[in-house]
Image (cartoon, helix red, strand yellow):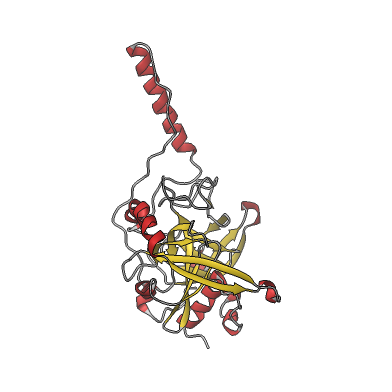
Length: 309
């Protein structure tokens, strides 16, 4: 079952032109010495090793260019964007009361975004900590592409410790969800050095069928969705459960999960959002939590966009 989309502007999918595979860096190799025969043998060995290494990569080397054509461009600009971010990022502070208690905690963060096409669900952005050190720099997802033009001017409502940013756009909150970090010689976030290699415009889909995500891996099988509206998903292959999902902002591009919230909300590289049927529209009649969080708020955005009363 596909949810009706009442605003075609929000349903425009990012279109790609080509795909490429990033090079695999294996570190500095020892110099091969000896005769020409030894050199040839060494080169053959090294070539074979590279092939085996590429085959052994947990995450697919296929890029995101088909779904997010600007991703490689943003990656090339990441170092310069970091310098721009550290100068221009907008400061935001608030006092948060965990669990509704009486003891407040001061939060200080800053955020800045690059430009993006008006029909894109994805944009490059960054957040800084209280000391202006980098917290996140990479791909952000928004369910409302027209909001991107106001990303650096709209009032900030919240900045999460994982890099999520909530803005007030035309009087309502819009979430920019941090979905995939970049990693360069200059750009180092909390996920640099993580065992998960799903960075730098590579596909998050591993050869084992698992999506390697910065905030928790997930297994998701969409083979039954177009026919039955069913996605089989779970944190582990052994715990996958078949459930009905609704899809917002559908696209003809293949679905690859780039963000998951407890396997209830799935954001895909095609720009679509899939929500468990049991959660929608039930959540539309529940209040927005005091601490504006990415996924609960994203569900409420679905309610507003679909004009659920």
